[in-house]
Length: 223
Image 1 (cartoon, rainbow, N blue to C red):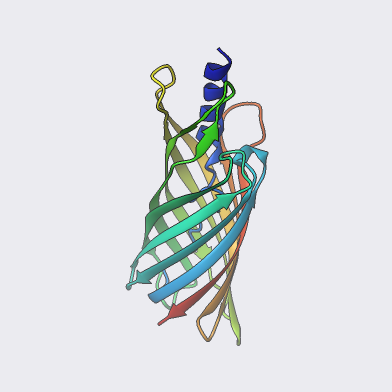
Image 2 (image 1 turned 60 degrees about the horizontal axis):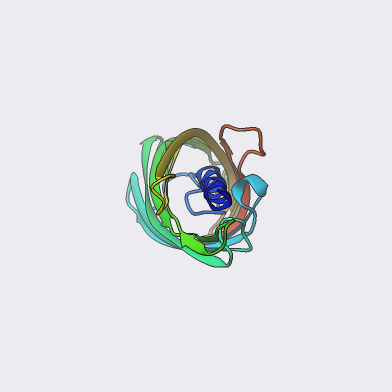
């Protein structure tokens, strides 16, 4: 019975804990960047997000209106895993409104991330859980050009879909859809360097703290 209750508790933590596309990182939807882009981001989460420290790397390419990217990340020191676990996935962004001479843009964003945390069970032993996270939403951004750096705040509401599978028939697979909201500010320099500050929250059900993460990232664009 203790093992079963521990499994249920782990499933609940996973279902509400993947607060970002990659566990422990914000969902960033600041717009479409043209050309090749490389970036790194670090993030920390509250108890609702499983705590711990995440580090992710990504690379992508942006066309006139469409951008695609792939990423990989690690999360350590989290209640979602006894050690460090990896996540990987991809994302796509499409600029619906706005252009090079228009400071305001509206963007569609969708992505998917997959991870397999290995957690200890209350009754002893450990097991691997399969977790998918799929954010789908829109992003609104404003660009304020300056002589040296362009300042771009953005805000992105989304449908936040999480699907977790366990190896136990008594628990099975759980799929949950919640409202998610992320936002931040990007500083873009003339040499292609970018600095990203981002905040992410998932308004999941329950009485516990809402899964929340903050992140700091660096990126470089080759236009």
